[in-house]
Length: 133
Image (tube, rainbow, N blue to C red; front, side):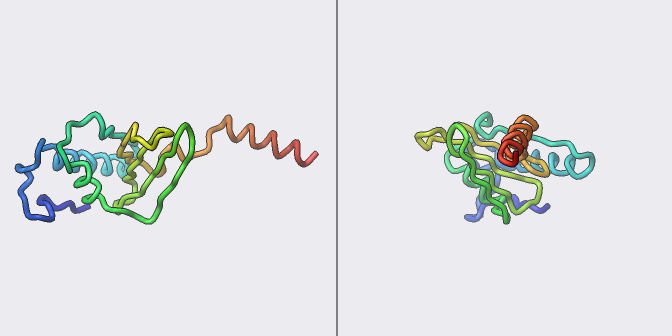
């Protein structure tokens, strides 16, 4: 995975408002290496990291967009976007007023929010069984 160390406008990383963009991208790279090497999943809460104006957008720009986008509606809309780096996902949760209430980078095969939960599988099986009897 190659991530350039200067912005599209040519600014050096030291000129970023907080200096957290490049270290965060390195953290994502290390997390992707851990996923590759031993299946270790990582969740990074972007809202817990001090970022200056435009830095969150810069991170999203650097990660790019992949082929998969998932939209969910559970206690408000959520969007899961694969980045151009397979195994790195941007996850955004919104409330019913469309305000962002959580933003994460998940480094995993597939975010757990998308996987079927055992209780839901059990309920689905019971419903299907009742329709067929």
